[in-house]
Image 1 (cartoon, rainbow, N blue to C red):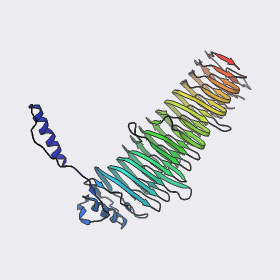
Image 2: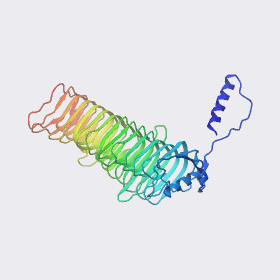
Image 3: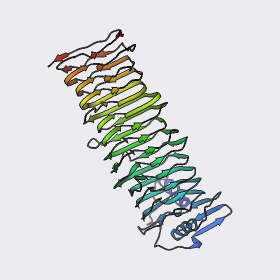
Image 4: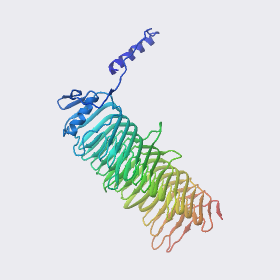
Length: 526
């Protein structure tokens, strides 16, 4: 139906109703219907006015795709979608081919492409197979089945060679099946592989993913790597509908980005993940990013995984926000996770594993869920499983639980602190913590040289070590040399249960400091 006519009709009916009557007529209103594609192509369906092109029907859409496949890149041009299109589940070959790029602006004008089917036995598979310095915006996709046999499979862009801007894209009823090549799948809900600068805003993907192998699968982006990459106000899944599933026989799986592959900066702001599960058979799984090598800035993000689902790595490193982080000057702020997190080794409510030379900051963060690590040197924490870098935690709340390490090193906030300084301020744990050894209400184990300072930290959870060493604040601390730590204005109100060394085991090889109002309550020896 013509949009102007619809508005006019609504106003007219409202006037009649205010006047006290409704016209006694039987109106058969015109209905808007998508133009249905039967597999044809027509140049008359694509019209031009200067640097603007207009897609007026389904055959015109196919003709536009063919022009890109034949080498027209539309650089400096804008292509407008002028109608809804029903692709009718007829196999579509995508816009462009493997080595021919779209380089213009595509404006969907909030029209919908429905029943999109793409199945290509190659890499770089998507609505746009290749882009270079392109903008794609204001487009809706409903019911899409995208299948690739190699790497780079996604609903919107398979591969972005140059800068890519993606704005106002919504995919509902999506299904992406990624192939793999040379150990990689590079598949995503919207973007597969993007080594170029990516700017994404107000984009959404509601759907599922599967892959029979390879690495790097993301709810929105499979892999990204350019300095300044920014994803804002975007989401995977929906709080009001059935949640999507991310599943990979490989590693590097994230609710927003599978992997950020360089030591540059990535910003993810105000994004949401709603999933039934996020899993990989191998390592590096995160609610937002699976694995990041870069300066990672995450702010205002929410991760919510259904109660019977998991953020899960079959091997190492699962985190509610990031599975594995190897760089410094990174931060997680004003974010929350509601999920169950598990891995064979090293898992946490925010980070599974972190290693770097400078400082990672986690602030204004809430975790509500359980953490479970199953094998030797497991290391489980309500915020971080294992840290091997400088860490600052402030204004943290951990609830739900339990936090469990089947072997050693479980903490309400951090399972294992290695040889770098850590600061904990205004932190509260209410989850029960259990380990075979080294269970703590805030930290499970502090290593030699790890200067850990605690201020205004409180534990309410029950702390249990079936072997030895359990404490309301720290389970075990191996401070030596000139290393010392400070525990101030902190308290434990949870029960502490262990065969030996209850209340906190501190091995001070040289003078240390334990100060000010450190409290223990309800200590019980087995």
